[in-house]
Image (cartoon, rainbow over the protein chains, first blue to last red):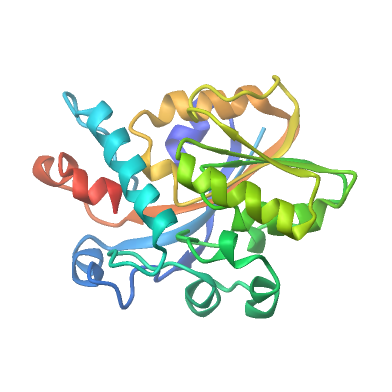
Length: 45
Length: 204
C-alpha cells in the first residue's frame, strides 16, 4: 500500500492506527492466520 | 503488506461479486455476512462516537462496513472539498459533511445502486445539502483535476485490483498540498497464489 502510494507521487505515506476489525466475525480465524487488520493511512500530495 | 492482484485474475468477476455483496448489505444490513456492520461495531472496534452515530439517519449508518476510522487521522477543515471513495450508504460522508459545514462539499462515489439510494436518502434526511453522491467507477472519477482537499475512504482500496491506476487517479484529483486519509486492511503474511486468487478473500 505504502509503496503504491509513493509510486503514484504521494509523499509521507504511512499507516497510523490499527484495528482488530474482524474480531468476533466468522472470518476471525482466517484473519488471525493471515494477520489481517484494519489500518488508517495518510499520504500527501 | 497489501494484496497484489495476480496475473490472470478475473477482475470483471471480482467487480460483480463486490457489487452483489454490498447490494446485499444495503438490502439487509442485519443479514449473515462475514464482516461487521453498523454503528455499534464502528464504536466498539473502530473508535467512532456512538452518540454521534446514533444521531445520524440509520438508513445510512446501519450498512456501514468500514474497517478503520479515517476521522482519527486529521481534522477535516471547515469549507474543505472532500471525496469519499466507495462511500457505500454514506455514513462517513454524513460525518464529513458535518465537519466541513455548509461552505464545504462532500462527494461520495460508489458503484452500487442500492447503496447510493440509501446514501442519498440519508443525506436528505440529515439536511446536509453539501453532501452528494455519484455513481462511478473509482478508477474514473467524475471529479475535476486538482480540486479535492481530502480524499477519504474506508475498506475499499483492498477491493481494487489495480491499485497503481487507482492511486494515479486519486493523485490527479487531489490539490497540491491535499491528502488522502483512509482506512483499509493490511495483511501481515505473504499470501499464497491460491489465496490471492480466492474471490471470497477479496470480497470479504
